[in-house]
Length: 92
Image 1 (cartoon, rainbow, N blue to C red):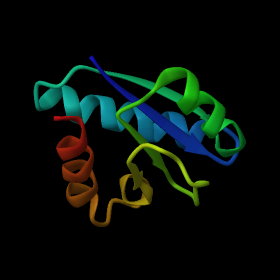
Image 2: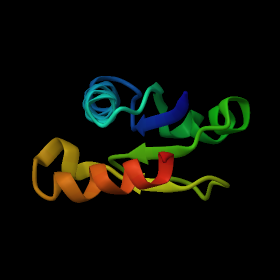
Image 3: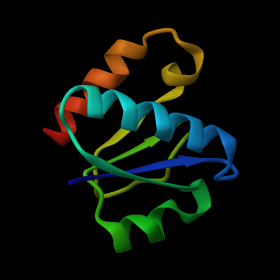
Image 4: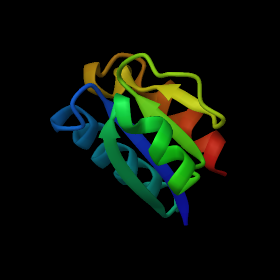
């Protein structure tokens, strides 16, 4: 089971929307993932607890010791496939 953290400014609708879409995409590719959402202010602490394979965000992230992906395209629909492929490559 792969672990992914999705962060946004408030840890609300934006991160949950991105998380659901990532989870659905990965499942369609045969990859089971546990996706957790949080606020950007909480992301460093959560990374140290969860040890995710990747952190995705629609906003700027602080420096982290895990790979990160800017996932804004998942919301806008422009360049989505490239972002999904980045995530898939990181969790495989």
